[in-house]
Length: 592
Image (cartoon, rainbow, N blue to C red; front, side, top):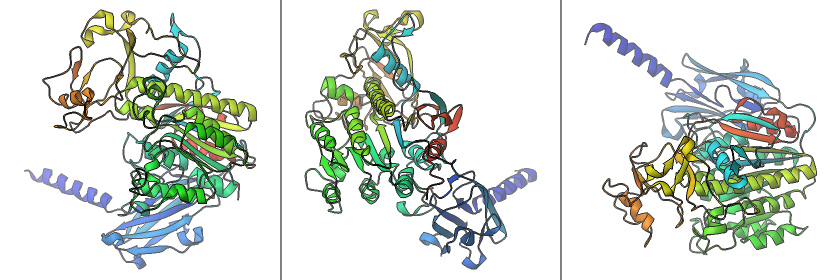
C-alpha cells in the first residue's frame, strides 16, 4: 500500500470517529415543536464526561433556565460510556427558531428547532383523522373500478375520499430509513416529530429500556389536556397495533402490546374500538395472554366504560344517551376483512361471527364522542389494507379499501351535518403495487398466457356491486392484474385466494402452514424451485432471502381533506405537517 493511500485512510478514519463521537441532541435538528407541547430534551455525550464538563444552552442561555426546570445528569447511563443530560416534560412558550448547543471537552453539537404557534381562533370543533394503512394509489384505483364501475375509459362514480376539497402529496420517510413502518409514520401524524422504525411517540436514543427514550406529547394527550376534547380510537386491527397506538403510546418497541394496553388505560380515550382482546385479559382466562395477571377489561369497566364484544351490542350500547365511554373488543386479534366477513366466511368468522364493519364502529364512535360539549378528536384506521398487501392478497386489500371509503363517507356525512369537523384521509405509507392489465382465463392455462396488457386488457367483468359497493364475486373470468413489485419466492396463480388469506411463503421445512390447508403446503413448496401447481407461475423473489412477505415502499402517498382547516393541505408536505395542520385547526398553540 502506498503512503498517500495510507494517509487518506487515516484521515477518513479520524473524520468518521469524530462524527461518531459527537453529542446527540433530542429533539433532533429541524424538529418542529408546537409551543406549549411537552417534550423531553436529552443530550447524549459520548465518552462519559463528568457532569461538571457539560454545557447545554438554548438561544445562548442555560437550557434549564430557559425551560424553567433543573436538568438531570446521568453519568455512564445504562452502564455505557456516555453521559446523559435530561430535562423531561419541558415546553417552550414562545415561537420562532431555537438553537440548541451542547458542549463538552472542546466538542460542540448544534441543532435548530422551529417552535410554532397557531393563529387566533379555533377553526374546527372536531377532527376526524382516517388512516388507510398501506393505502396506495393502485388500491384506490382498483376500489373505484370495483365499487363504481368503468367503461369506455370513464368511471361511473367517485370514491368518498376522491371528492374532497383539498389534496396533497405526503412524504413518509423516517429518521433512520427512507422506508417507514406504521409506528414511526403514525408518530409523525400524531406528534409532529420524526422517529425511526418500530418506535411510537419517542426519539430513538441509546437507552436500553424501551420506555426510557425521549418522549413527546401526542395530539390526543394535547387535546385532552388543553381543550378537554373527547378522544376516540377505532381500528380493524388489534387495538395495540402501531397505528391506533400512535395516539397513546411512548415506547421504542411497537411490539410491547401489554404495556401499550396499560398506556391506553393511562390516557383513557373515551372510545376504544378494535381487536386484540387477548392482551386485555390475564393468561389462562378466556384466551388471555397478559403475563402480569391484570384484567384490563375489568379495569376499564371500573373506570366507567361500557364494554361490548359484538357488532349487535356495539350498536345498542352506543345509542344509549348515557354512554359516554365505550370499550369494544371484537376479536382476539385482528378483525376479519370485508371479503371474508361479508362473502367468503373465512378467517376467524366462524369463531367471531358478529364482528362490526369499520363503518359500524365509526358510526358508534361518532354517536358517543359527539356527546362531549368541548368537541372530539377521532382516529380511524383501516389496518388490514396493509396486512393483506404484505401477504400479496390484493383482492382482500381492495375490498377493505372499499370498506375504508365507506367509513370516509360516514365521516363526511357527519361533518356535513355538524359543519364544524375537519376530515383528513391519509395513508401512513405506500406499498409497491400497480394495476398492469387483466387476467383472462379464456386465453390459456398458464399465468403469462392469461395476462393481458394494453388493448388486450380490456375491462374486468366483475358483477355490479351491492348497495355497499362490493361486487359479490371476485372469481370472475377477466379480473384485474394487480401486481406487487417486491415479493419473496412464491407461487403466483393470478387468481383470488378463496380458501383464506394468501400465505406467500413460510419457513423452510414447515410443510403445511395449517393442517389440511393446501395453501400452506404450496407455500412451503414455494421455497423449493421444483414445484408450483398447474397454471401457477414460479416467482423468484426480489427481496432478501429471509423475507416471507411483501414490504412497504418509500413512495409519496395521497392525502385528501375537507372542512375547516383543510386549506392547509396543498402541494407536497412532510408527514409531520399533518400534526401541524390539526394543531392549527384546533388552535392548540394558544389553549392553556
